[in-house]
Image (tube, rainbow, N blue to C red; front, side, top):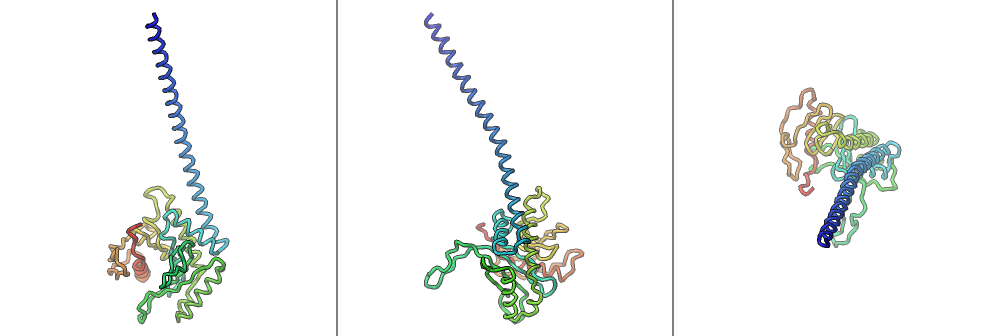
Length: 282
């Protein structure tokens, strides 16, 4: 009797332990499932918050054109890979001579010949560059550059660039230079790059990271030259550019696509050749 009782007791205890263990597993599974549902909601909420922050940063440019708003918009776009290295190049004139204006927020380490560090690269700088066509007598890439200090107003930085163009004997370029236009194009370009990331797969406007807005229709991305109206994509390789060359390559004589005038196409191809060499290390 005692043996039988001990067997029944042991069996009952084992069954209770098994039931308790199964109950714990069931509870944990249900909790895990709940946490997965919560995770999806939290991720969606974070995504919506991020997109709202991005849209707000870009929209703020129109309300307050300043070092802070430009820097914030570039930073948001660079953080999610919509632009490369915190910079975007846009048109800076409405007519010839054509000007390309680059806005870049980046850090750099600067030291003297005696190794004294002048800038340790901890604070990003906002730089504005105006690039224009090279004259036959010039051997260098013609650029006017200025640092947009935090205390500078938009009219101060615009006036400084205009003055530098005139001082460098580029009066036609100074007269064509339209800084407000460049700022509007920057705002529109950043919004285009950010919205492209939100479109469903295979429905994107751009095939790669946005490098430059050349005209209303033509842009340059990591994939090549693209027409955002027609969806046409022309790779750098097909234009004859060496992917890893340190110098801008001379393109092939590629005929312009249908309904694109030759002068516009030639300028788009020229701008494609001015892009920096891709960083193979990311």
